[in-house]
Image (cartoon, rainbow, N blue to C red):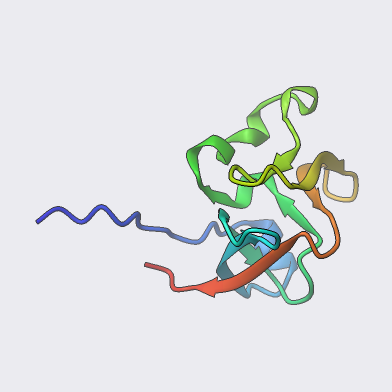
Length: 114
């Protein structure tokens, strides 16, 4: 039998260490229709206000967006109900591309690593 469930491993880098080395995988859902939007690595404690593009694991349409120019990245919206969830922008403090999430646009839940 073939296991089709993807395997995830944490990205370990200076950004993770700057936030205390504590990471977890979370599922991001649309608050309006409960559709799964992304699997994301959250580093550190606190609220989720922005999603760093290099921390998105799934779906494939949202991975590797950090390599694209900022003007070519579309807004983050729900694939099911088309609700707008976030806007691509540059986080100036760390010079990293992010989706700035709108308040109360998403629901998050902790996910097991594999």
